[in-house]
Image 1 (cartoon, rainbow, N blue to C red):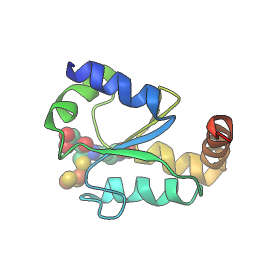
Image 2: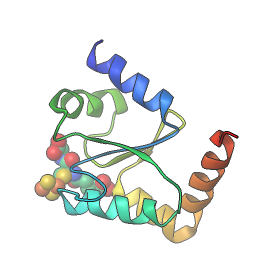
Image 3: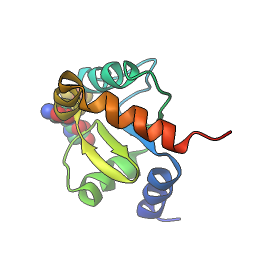
Image 4: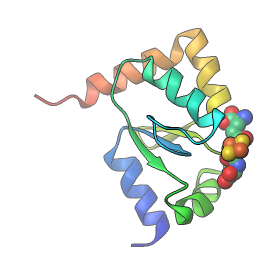
Length: 109
Ligand SMILES: N[C@@H](CCC(=O)N[C@@H](CS)C(=O)NCC(=O)O)C(=O)O
Ligand code: FES
């Protein structure tokens, strides 16, 4: 599988996925920590990829996404943005709505 195929698989299989540095429990950068913080406050589980453990994804996702930095939040296969956008959307309430609606949509059983 190429790196792009890996990315496409991850974003299609996980309706809410955060590409970040480190893990939600132990973020390796303040930007990723802020992203985890607002996303966690939406109260819904989410997938993540630690790009520090996946240098191929770190190298290729910015081109694929047309977004130069991490974190990157992807919802239903689409890039939402980095931590600045996530914080803005959280402050307006938009992030909570998006995340909760997405979770409800994909909830099984
Ligand atoms: N203002 C950005 C901050 C993110 C940022 O600047 N990330 C840098 C430093 S962690 C980055 O990902 N650089 C590319 C890299 O490290 O691969 C946002 O809203 O997400
Ligand atoms: S790792 Fe240095 S700013 Fe994110």
